[in-house]
Image (cartoon, rainbow, N blue to C red; front, side):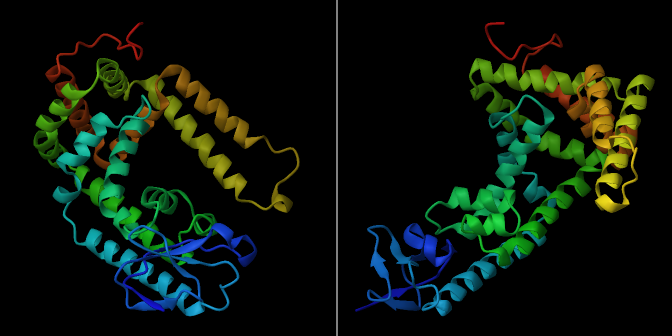
Length: 321
């Protein structure tokens, strides 16, 4: 008995000795076929599970076809991203995610929320028929090489995954380097951000405002001489550590300072003075567009803070504080 199968989209590859729970997920409707004797068994869902136990050598064509088709989907997604406009990327959906999906009370939390929304929209479709699409998509972003393969993401698609990440980051950053573009994007998404904020529970509102308030304060202090000096010392210590860490052990002279500890001291000293994640974020924006770009970020953040009825007093994270 032979079952028709349509597009092999996701697979979990494991050595034969570990293959008891490993499978290739084959969605319904494929031109690829295999028999029950070869291991294709109905799984009660919308496709067939092909058990790899002891059959990797016997089914190289099936496995390679799965890899090839996943590569094709990854390349198609990459081409779609390359054809995008900044306006498509910097959408109202991304803005809503920034407000509602805050994981950490820092700039990292805000940018993470935006990143996850973008990748979920434009990258995760590669794994549409994977039995655990979210995990496969996350693994592709989080891991490299064999680590990705370990959780069912073929290593062959990693170059396309990395290119997607680069293209998406560059598209957004290049557009937002211009203060006028930042203003235009903010005015477009401002109404939905306010709407999303009003849908949050009170404690979530406090968390978002706390992160934003710290950012505003940091932007206001960015050019203070003390802050500038500490940022420069941190970057110098980080550069020394990176340069030294790349040297082979045999080329590291005895008696050299511990550059990692020096970097940590510089980081701690900076953090004691000002929020280090925010200040480094704004320092990168300064490198891209100078004081005018930093000022536009400050203006937009302050406008939103005012629009939702908040004052500039420190915002507690916990509602009981």
